Amino acid sequence: MKCEVLLRVALASAGLAAVLGCPPIQPDEPLEVRIQASATEGKAPLAVSLSLWWSGSSEPSVASVTWNFGDGSYSRSIPVDAAAPMGYTFTNSGVYAVRATAFMATGEVVSDTIQITVSAGKPPTARITGPLGERIAMWASPLSFDGSASADPDGSILEYKWQFGDGTAATGRAVEHTYRGSGAFTVRLTVADDNGNTDSAEKTVQIAKPQVRMLVGVAGLDGQVTIELDPTRAPISVENFLQYVDDGFYDGRDGQGATIIHRVEAWTSQIPLVQGGGMTIDRELKETRDPIKNESGNGLSNKRGTIAMARTQEWDSATSQFYVNVGDNTGFDGQYAVFGKIVGGMEIIDGMLDLPLEGTSPNIGPIDPPVIKLAERYKP
Image (cartoon, rainbow, N blue to C red; front, side):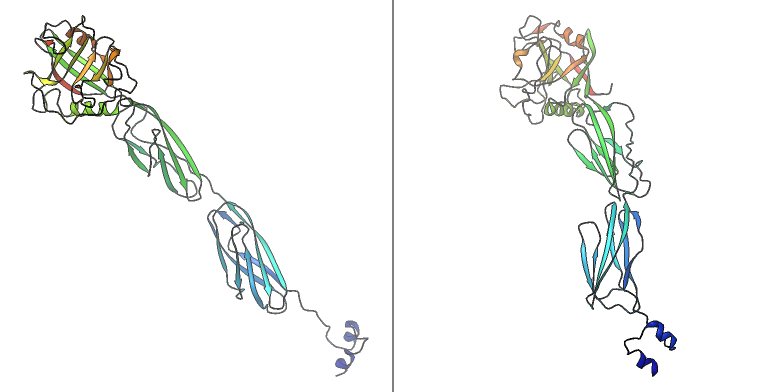
């Protein structure tokens, strides 16, 4: 009772109260908040559980808590339940200042900030393997490319993107691709891992121009002629010619008889050439597929040693017949489509001009015509 009276007087103090035997007066501890995180560092994507820890002499009465995750793209206010953990995933690497601001029912505002460090992880390594090695691949042959040797040291590869150097692309760990052109192509593989890191690898593929070999023969004139085709400049004509080769049309493997060289314009002609691929030994025309588009504007010239599509007076009428320019017949440029050249056996073609001939141009031909005994794709 005396302590209660004395505590009301103006001279009351903590020291006097102690003398009188009363307990000292302690002020309330200030309210503080601390952020607790399940992780403060890790690689992206990093999922973190965040909660608040309170200190002070009284239970906090929280109106709301605002979380700012420091990535500039997300801020969220959670009302009332200050004890509930907050989950957040950091998808990108960086150092983030995570701040929690608590608004108390009393009007007081307290806050805390912690640092979360998110690393990108180690990048993957892209590798291309496959059956190619260093060899030259053949045109129009399916080629296999494999990215399975690619690896990621601290995660997994999620994406494989391929670019084949010819304007086409594909996705997948292992893919196949068929080139419709010839030359050198750079194959590029780009892999991406679960952290968003990427790496690329390249490999050069050399695609050879397709070749066809023909065995032609007549008494005193036998030999092999090798033809190199140009699918880049004359894709339609090359596809057409190769289809006739594969079907056995020229050498009679189709069961309809082999074809002959039925026309020869001699050295004395203004257009020295040999023409064949349409008539049997009985000089009967073989049935062909539908005619193709004239590709005479492809930039290839009717010079000596080139092979071109023969046709009628109709512009788009070429089917199976072809001719070989024995001289420079550049007057045909822009009219008849060149699609390749002779790279072996031109002497056999030249020898045909010395054969005994009959008829008059354009229906002049050997009395005993050379026969195409074999026509097949050739791998040098």
